[in-house]
Figure (cartoon, rainbow, N blue to C red):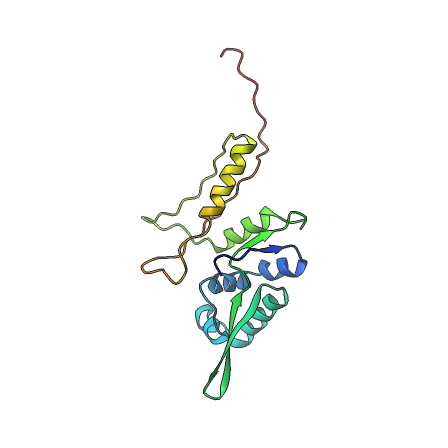
Length: 176
């Protein structure tokens, strides 16, 4: 699943599915590996019916798929997986960065003393060529270690956004 293309979000059903805080959490859980309804119920602390409903919404939106079924004690266990670990907003979707920023804000935990949480806004002055090169490097670094290789690791979010900023440029100071 590491080499697949990101899902390009553009349908209202996809945005509605990802816009719900519980489904957003489920997507983050499923980024680790496929899981059953029982496993999702345990990790999220909700009922199987609630989890089943929200998995169905994600499936109907084309974001989650049935990955595998296993026979267990006379029943069938279904494993659900993301269709892709990455999501990208379609340029014509009518919604964009604010959707991703709001999703990141919703999952941010409060800062803890002595831990490396850090949020800062910086502005760079770049040529279009430099901006394209930087965007490519950010895409390369946007994939981290595999979720199954997490010995001693805690989850941290990384929201990368390279955008043209609406900052007027001052004319040179006449005293310079």
